[in-house]
Length: 79
Image (cartoon, rainbow, N blue to C red; front, side):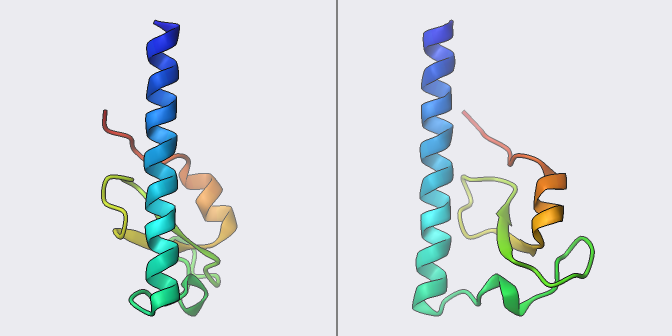
């Protein structure tokens, strides 16, 4: 079981990294505005990053500030 848990961690990390890369490329190409151009969807402060709730939907993101990103916790993983 430990081995399987390790595989799940590797898979989920790879999915998260891939999703973050897709957001980064979309921002660089101009398809997605930078997060700092928006207020945080939770508190209204200036956003500093995009946040995923589901890494399987890499461009389904919302702008959040650093504090709200921490409060939201980890995104959902589907295996």
